[in-house]
Length: 68
Image (cartoon, rainbow, N blue to C red; front, side, top):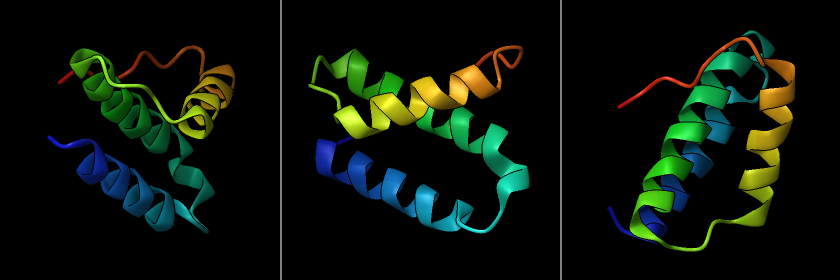
């Protein structure tokens, strides 16, 4: 998947999650999955999304990321 397409998907996910704080765990899992796809391609990661992933991981340390 192209980098711009992944960025667009993440943007949509963030837009959908607005106003739905009960879904933060799902947001974390989706952001983590999308960033892992970028990591697998060796592309540089958007710093703001890496920071979001880090902050969400602090909030949900007991929730391992969903795979695949």
